[in-house]
Image (cartoon, rainbow, N blue to C red; front, side, top):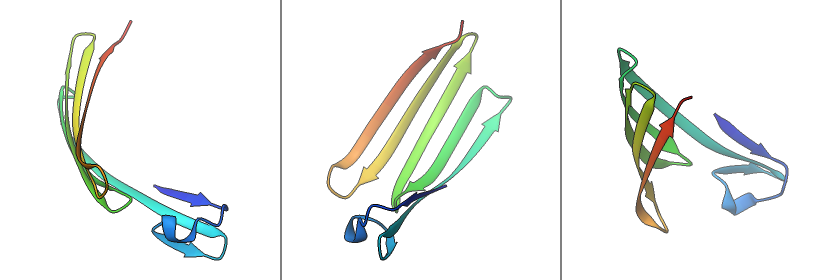
Amino acid sequence: DFDLRFEGRQYASQAHFGKISIDSHFGLELSYLNKIAARIGSDVGNLTMGAGLRFNRFTIDLALRQHSDLDNTFLGSLAVRF
């Protein structure tokens, strides 16, 4: 996935060409029986990793994101399907 912007961000982006800037997002998810998932990726050049667990109507997701300014960030979510 790419963010393509026409804001003249120049040095605030991964690549720029005049007023056009580009930031990239890549990822891979491996899932087993649609119940357990492992994820790894790159968000604007920073490593991301995560895992998910689905049971009945509930889904739990945990993620680790490296960031050059904020150090490591941990994210978690709980979703309920009705």
